[in-house]
Length: 391
Image 1: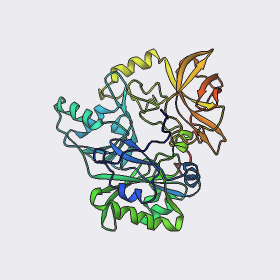
Image 2: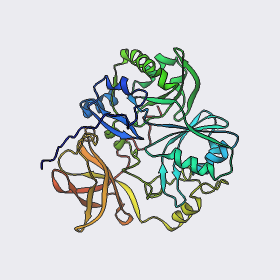
Image 3: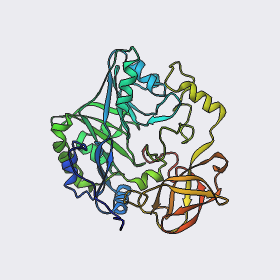
Image 4: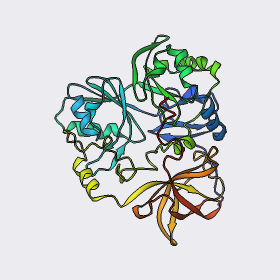
């Protein structure tokens, strides 16, 4: 039987639709994936054109798939500080933090952006997993007075070098200048209640607009942003995986999973996994042991020979690529693409630690070029200190 190279995705009621689903669909979505049980637009025709537009202009993304899980109540701080390894005493109201939610064995359950919107109100802007169910189970047995619920709030991302100009057109001069990973709370836009954070998934200057009453007002917000973006050449695209791979941004579900810990994926910084804080967060003892003993594998950057590996989001990588040393399989490539700017194939590979040194030469199975050379390379491959998004 012949393999269908580009099978369609079924549109039906079992999968959820973001509040922006019908608005974003009008721009000509060419391919969806499923993320957090939602249809997620991946691109609108040419992912490479979208990449260049992101680098040079400004873009809007439907990221309503980032389900918003609110943790509130008198014990919200204590409970949330128990879920994540970061010390939330260092997170003021109106700040965001990139966090891990860790399991008792130190494994990564999710890597959301955490937003603190009040003294006793936190939100998890989720990556792809059912963390709300985990949090509800932990809360049920915790004895703490907290309420956990998915709220009717949905973000869009505004990303690219002209992002500040679009945000300025929408909100005036102050909001575009909020610091990286800070928030502007309590905003209104044409009668709609919104918040804006200085965050994104692109490695470019970026913001997320969080819309309250999203089911009611999504189309209105979408059209308002489009109108404000017209003078700045705003274009609707999907999340750009070429750019996120360049930027060293990881994707939960492929670059890390429950059986990985923060140290394996290169994000076990003392501020990210704070083992000295007073809070006895879930997984603390396991992560102390892992840090002391060291890990056996690491996620590294790789440069890859052979033909172009494409954009990652157009059916080019339907499985991991096996990685070899001395003719034995030692690991796998988890994400890969061709970077038009760097003019080479780049990606991430999970390897035994003895192969993690920069410059280590390996081989891997390329889907079109066969067995090719790969070299362990810096991660991120571009703008390693994140100077661009901090502008």
